[in-house]
Amino acid sequence: MVRLVRRKPNGPGEIFWDPAAGILSSDELVGEAVVHLAGENIADGRWTRAKKQRIRDSRVKGTRLLCERLAERAVKPEVLVSASAIGFYIDGAVTDLDEYAPSGEDFLSEVCEEWEAATAPATEAGIRTVLLRIGVVLSCQGGALAKMLRPFQLGLAGRIGPGTQAMSWITNDDLARIILYAIEDRTIVGPVNAVAPNPVTNAEFTRSLGRALRRPTVLPMPAFAARLAFGQMADELLLASLRVVPGVLERRGFEFRHPEIQGALRHVLAQC
Image 1 (cartoon, helix red, strand yellow):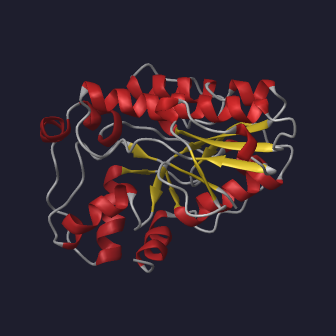
Image 2 (spheres, one colour):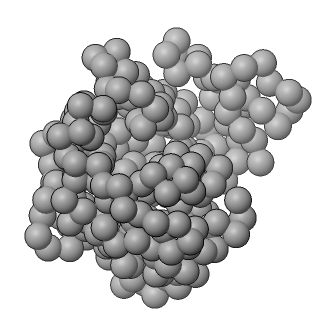
Image 3 (spheres, one colour):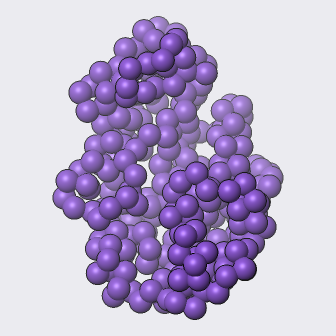
């Protein structure tokens, strides 16, 4: 395995790249499969104009640079698995959203569309390209759950806004298995929703996490307070309702190890 890094490489297992400066050598990109998950953390700080530009550029420019360099190679990889996100879809849909559902019109939807379009050089070069539209990843190593743990452990948390908004999630373990599945199954191409088959409401998630931690969840955050604290990010991340289902994976018979939220949280928390 070879990693792309933005610091001085530590040996032959790492390749330096700088997406902002367009620096990446195609000569070093040797391998049968490429997994691209890089991007600015969308949940770290308020969405200022500069932050939104970094969110967009880190995904679009980085993906386009990588795909252009892969396309330049005489011997190309067989497959590119590139991250996208369920933010692609329209907020508030009343039906389940599979891979055929339309995109939304907000900031995250636009970013996801441009992010996916940036893989065009790889696709046009004949590289099988899989676009993983990833939901909320449950992991203690980072992301949304890691940020939630402290207030929940202190009993200082509850539902956000009405609590009726849908939340589509996936454990880190199942996400890794989906990536391997996408690499190994040569018939998979295009968008794949990387989410568990049973989305929950924010209120259901809150109760499940409270039960898993054996802590009360009686301090809700009203929608206006979320907007005051987080600005636009509140509407597009915390209050958005995205009931996304893994249509492609379910039709192919993919077996999730953690399909239900309560068991998933217990599994993840046991690793913390």
